[in-house]
Length: 222
Image 1 (cartoon, rainbow, N blue to C red):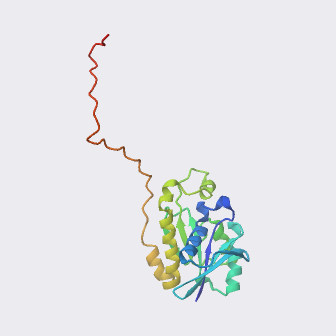
Image 2: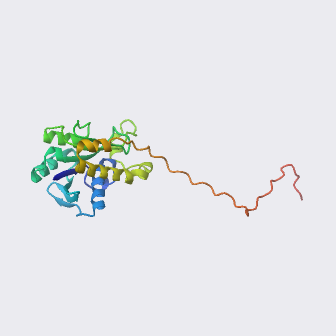
């Protein structure tokens, strides 16, 4: 059985580690974990293929900007003859706390340009998607700067672990099906990232001499 896994993101080194590119980052990790063929530039996308438990996973990272992602999705669905129920779109989501995952079989684009374009091109809201929460900790009017910005230092502490969880969610979807995978993926909420701890001052050893307190009342001597 074949699947088409789509990671959403923007092409270019300036976007490489941004929140909006989490779809690309998850697929890059999946390929590295599998030790399979690397992504190669192909028709409208970077393409790679790997296997998991007898299933063929076709991975694409569209080469157009986010709001045109649907064109690449449609081409590869038609080219590989993969039905909607066997595709999975990996995307960021502001409405979900950082690191939380939501696997669903249908739904609106929720204001996400990539999902909105896929919905428009496929003329359907019924296709599986895995949403990776990036939170909404930005000031009013700063949404674009936030999604196109890098993960904070606090978020980066758990980023690798959360990406691994997203990779595992893809494997669950392909191996046990959407409904059962939803029961596994959507249950646990990740903990909020904690700020890095301040290093503790070293305790004085027993051999460290302790200075006697100065007698402030004593008269200065000539």
